[in-house]
Length: 202
Image (cartoon, rainbow, N blue to C red; front, side, top):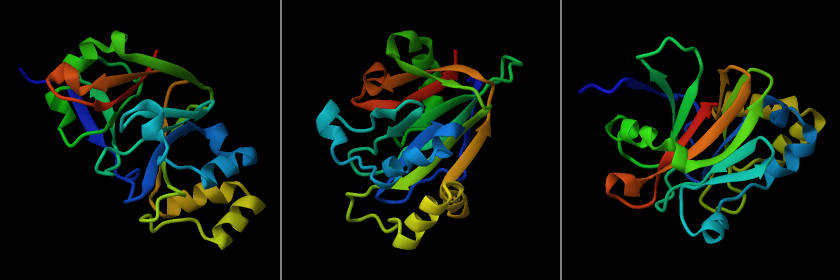
């Protein structure tokens, strides 16, 4: 039976080696007080915190990162379209494995309630996925330079412009409201670890 879900892969929020996939609401990116978080982000201590890779981590309100897998491979963002409804709400799946999400998503989605993790609110009709260099990862070749940091400090809008210019930024128009986040596990499909994270309007 053909799945009723279609997956549109993000073309922009693709992280390079040593980078971290993040997502946030627009006010988070436009607030200069958050710049220090952007400049000093790392995943190297996240595994020890939760005891596993590919997990979701809340940095502060409305700002999250998704850890890379055990091989250092970054997650992939998909927009999920339910072909059986006419609803315009946006649903996103952050895939943390090399598996095609269409092979397992529908079964995992049916059991999503038991995998609820947290929620956040969007009030500006925008959800942004972006990549940041891991400040403690020596293999990362996209670390911010002094001139970049100065530009961000002078005008926080330069931070988003920098991410856009380097194709490290993707902005989605979404419906305002509360969004739930669910974590899907491989053990539901006969494997181990985290399969991915679902972001969906409540």
